[in-house]
Amino acid sequence: MDLPRFRYCPLCATALDPAGGPHGRPRCPACHYVQYADPKVATGVVVEHRGQLLLVRRNHEPRYGAWSFPSGFVDAGEVITEAAAREVLEETGVQVRIERLLGVYSTADDAVIFVAYAGSTTGGEPHAGAEALEVGLFSPGDVPELGFPHDAAILERWRSGDHTPAAP
Ligand SMILES: [Zn+2]
Image (cartoon, rainbow, N blue to C red; front, side, top):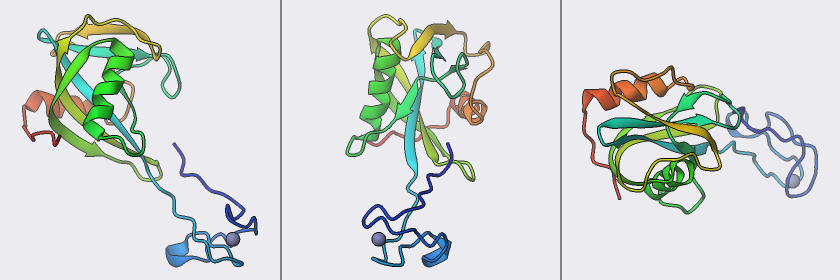
């Protein structure tokens, strides 16, 4: 996702000076509003279900049709572990207990910060929700090609068993 850029001041509609603010940020010459490009926070879960990994095949861009972990954006004011469990439920129909933090991932010129957790199912039978083409259960040693750049590193971290308790 590209960083959002606006040409006009959202407060007074004056054309922004594209690099007139601190550290080259866009600044309004009339009301001195400075445009900060806030990141978007997304979260996903490596979900274990009866010894297998639960993955979803995406039915929306980016990476339409790719396998990946259940994931999505965190709402402002939402506890991130609750957002992670919510996304798992929405996409796969199962309840999950979030157990550990796997890592925090970001990329230059990409607005998304991705927070990856590990969890285990506590209820429900996996089925594709509204945001998934299908769900699949895979042996941890035989996972299909995954859709996002950080996915392989996240899976490697999960396999390593490194344990950082997830904050509530
Ligand atoms: Zn202004």
